Each structure stands twice: as structure tokens, then as C-alpha cells.
Image (cartoon, rainbow, N blue to C red):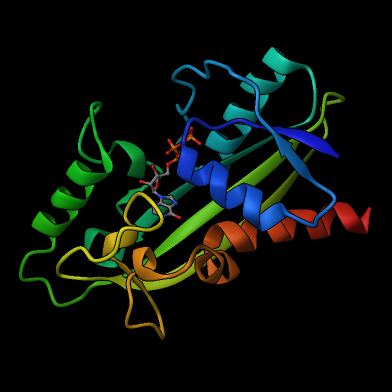
Length: 190
Ligand code: ITT
């Protein structure tokens, strides 16, 4: 099945392509302006909004994903607001700087990434996959791989940050890897 991935995040696109290589889902991209559709309060709502919006635009199966970082010491923030944690002009660098600032001197540094992926079909049906990636927040950024909060995110059982791991190492255990493989399993069960 060829599906359009509705994302403007190149890091997400590269990871989704690698994760789904060899699966029945082949990702294609279509230039589109998704607009400010992430008005929901949950990952599922936002993933469905992105998928529905893109489906209207392209008229063929669409895959969308919403993800975020949940930090225990921040009561689960930034969560679904992770991309815009440091404001409307946020960048990965300003988001990471804000996270480090808020956690200065904080000993409890456990956190997790969560992802919800939605495959929406033109007949109105949709399929959902979810994944969680447990870890903790380092005291300084390390590594240049991945994207987003990866330089600060140290997966449980790892000494390296996610940005120091090879892409396929991250994809094997990441929230995105789990969510997309769960989605593929759901479709295969049909
Ligand atoms: P699209 O909505 O266009 O897909 P986005 O970057 O806005 O792109 P999200 O709304 O899902 O995507 O925001 C997720 C944010 O959470 C993302 O911008 C990162 O800051 C962070 N994030 C999610 N998954 C991540 C990962 O695997 N590594 C690092 N940061 C991640």
C-alpha cells in the first residue's frame, strides 16, 4: 500500500521510511501545506487531525503521526506540545535549552517519548498504532544524529543519548518504531 506521510518534519520522514522498509506500507511524499491543525489536546486527536487534513488534500491513504516527550519532573510536559515547547518560533535548539533550564538541579530526570500513528483511508476507516520509549534527560546535549530532543534523551539501559545511536539502533526500540510496527501488525491482522 502506497501511503502519503503527512509531516513537515524531515527527521520523522527519514525514520518512518527506514522503519517501514520491507513492510507492506510504502511511504510517498506530496508537497502540501498542512496548516496549523494540531489543535487537539492528545496525540491521537492531533494525529487524526493531521491525517484527515492531508487526506482531504491528496484523496488517498495517509499516514500521520503525533509524538512528544513526557518529563516526569515536569508532570508530563511538554507532551503533545513538544514541537512548540519554547514558543511559536521554537527550534530543536531552543526547545532543548528550555528543557535543560527547567531541569537545572533536578535529580528526577525520567522521561519517555510517546508516539501515536494513524493510517487514514479515503473510505473513512482508520488504524492506530502506539509506542512508548522510556529514558531519562541528560544534563548536557550529546551527539548529532536523530532530531528534536535526541541529544538530551538517554534510553533506559543505554549510556549514549539517542543522538549518539545509529539510526537503525534507535528505530528498533523507539516510540516511532513501536507505533509504526504496531500499525503494520494491525493491518496485517485484517
Ligand atoms: P509534523 O507534525 O509535521 O509531523 P512535528 O515535528 O510538528 O512534525 P509533532 O507534532 O509530532 O511533529 O511533534 C513532535 C515533537 O516531539 C518533535 O518536534 C520533537 O521535538 C519531539 N520528538 C518526537 N519524536 C522525537 C524523536 O524520535 N526524537 C526527538 N524528538 C522527538
